[in-house]
Length: 237
Image (cartoon, rainbow, N blue to C red; front, side):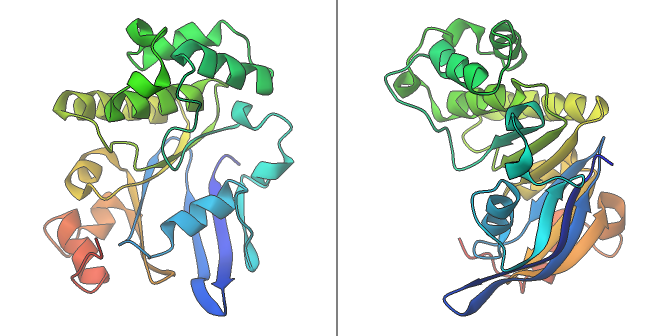
């Protein structure tokens, strides 16, 4: 099984429920959009999935395995979460080299992911010199280093210009077509509508809708209409 499985996930913080018995799956070979207004519980779910936080109960696994149980997690799971984490004075190549060393990944993979993400000309640039969009691409390059089956992407199109958005659509489709399991959160609903195969909408820690894009949209004209109808008509930005 190559699905991401969220099962009966609950999380309490200071006595308040953040996630309430949340269950859904992201399937292999498909792009699953994980949607909800700010404060809905998306980040908490992803943090638990990536071993950065603990659930009060329930499970969040890759197949039947937790992230923390992987000896070399980058060879199974690629994640872009909370922006680009790296030392600003390091070069792009050095940043990726350290990731390969930490997860037993061949050095040759660095050139491949830079080519794949269009960053080959930036290989000697310092992280501090990268634009927001270039930082997003570098995050994706790092996520791809280990040929992972699973991609977990938090707001991956943030900072991309129109050309970058077009590139990302083709890129993420190609990854899904290779059979990878992709779970991504985003606030760009129009963009998600063009990319995603499946949709999961949560609000106030609870599942509101889950299904194929076609199924979710069958009652309304657009994903944006669906989103606002399920979350009370107001985004919390």
